[in-house]
Image (cartoon, rainbow, N blue to C red):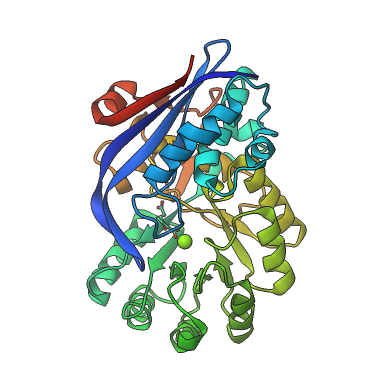
Length: 371
Ligand code: OSB
Ligand code: MG
């Protein structure tokens, strides 16, 4: 297959409520969307998960735009590419910029699925039609406020409730939720790499709450220290930011730096690498789940498809559209039924219709690369 044109768009999409993690807050998403067109005029949409600020990773909306325009898109335009080989093509002599690369790479998977007349999930190796859904709750102003959010999430049917934590919003917050929701509530915490081994006390205190896992407590570069911490905890450590490639997943397993992996295809450069991580983890009986980056309905389609692979055995951060947006940019919007999202297996490609008129309304910048 050959790409003849890629159009970049930036849209602005206000969140229904602010989302705060240990390193920053977002109220309105700036989202980079791509429309890829192959030599036969077939088009698909994809989404770049880079954030507004470099607080999750070094990439941002603006660095991704630059990387896409200058290096990533020119590398693939007009070249013969296959979904499974784009990753390697983009890795050669272009360091980093994984979210930018992933947006193109994943678009190629959707194009390939469309060309084959098959749903993306099935094309990528998915085996499940219903995916259990989790919610990620941002840091709230008080333990009581968090308890209220967690209580309604449980009532809405979410299968996993992730509590964002940070210094000053950890033990008391998680303890209050555990106390209010009871022992059986499926709770976990995500620190977004804010702690160091020097404040292991708070993390050891969290060990008493029967959490499903503690996500990325320490710095993203700190696999060795995560291994030291894991030795002190009964609760499994789950790594997110640290796992940027299949090699880092192998390192995690080898070092005992964590026992669960949050896979975000955008973080690792796309589907090929995400699938490789999935496979390595499966071979070592390490369960994985699909993380989220507050994606629009387009990025969500890719997450839902990925989460249908066999070793995604833990509920993913793939909440329904209404959790994030007044109105999504896909039709139908993503919904949750009894705590599950259905994988659209009834049509080829992404499985949802993209609301291009709405995207046009929301677009603040666009640039077409290629013919
Ligand atoms: O650490 O998983 C994270 C959102 C932005 C940046 C980092 C993270 C998150 C989430 C959101 O937890 C999950 C979702 O998309 O619902
Ligand atoms: Mg995380």
